[in-house]
Image (cartoon, rainbow, N blue to C red; front, side, top):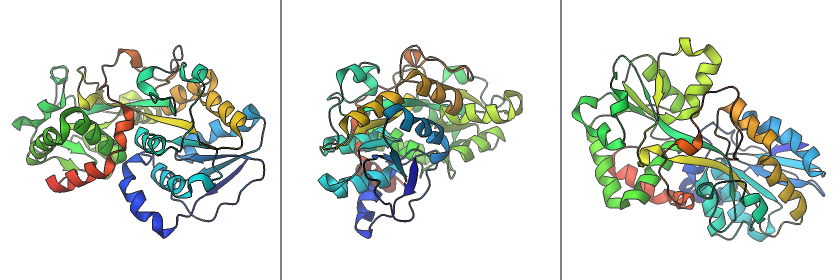
Amino acid sequence: MRRSRLALPTALLAVTATLAACGSDAGAPEATGDAQDADGALVIYSGRNENLVEPVLDRLEEAVGVPVEVRYAGTSELAAQLLEEGEATDADVFFGQDAGALGALANAGMLAELDQEVLDLVDEAYRDAEGRWVATSGRARVLAYDPEQVPEIESITGIDQLLEPEWAGKIGYAPSNASFHAFVTALRVARGDDGAREWLEAFAANDPQAYENNNAVLDAVDAGQVALGLINHYYWYQRTAEVGEEGVNARIHFLDSDDPGALINVAGAGIVEGTDQPEAAAEAIAFLLSDETQQYFADETAEYPVVEGVESTTFDLPPLSELQGQQIDLNDLESLDETLALLDEVGLT
């Protein structure tokens, strides 16, 4: 199986900027070098981090029965590349880190409708309503917290409580991170732009502490530098897998209300419209939803499997079905340009 990374033309920079929140918050490698087509190969554009999904995609070639070429870059970069290439693309499958990018491609007519049998493997909340993409794994927004500073964590059920004066200067967040942008986009979808602006202005006035990424936020909470942090759940689970739960002071709290802070976002995949490998592409999607692959996500990356009946044997994850996540059309997470403009207006960039 051949791998390559893409070099993006300069003309795509503006498009990439408006899709930045669709990037991998696991840190997908930057695209470098030129990609060469593989004759007869199934070409996958993967915005998922190579270190995370390489074991899965190594098995994919055997599953689909044809040569596979994987082109790695950030989800935003690859979505922009695919939109620029249009019908001339040689991509057959798009495998993205974020529902926003999938929604953008679907709404641009770049993704084909999937078989209903495949769609039915995943809850309706985690697939496109028109069947153009399907989730492959999920992640939940949570609060990381320092138990010593926040002994009353169970009383915090929604993001509005984070605006109270007692948390001034005590909340960490990652303003440039894709997962934070997705959260703010979900906030805009749920409350409208005016409601989102009101919350963000109050949040900014409460002096939140900015960090480079989710891991840095978790580090700050773990060290007691801040009391609370806005992150995705799997950062904490991966950390405890590395050093043991006893070696991590921070804990995480799942918001138990239908609140934008409980957003469940997904990685997912779709078949590129017009592919000349429709059968192999369909087999690839089915493989990503197979018990084998779902178990990998559950046990190795601490992400949520999206196929019923698969549970992690490594991490004690609350069942996805029991989380009261904010239910929105995940396609709506594509409206990133408005989110970035709003964050700039309120001084949270």
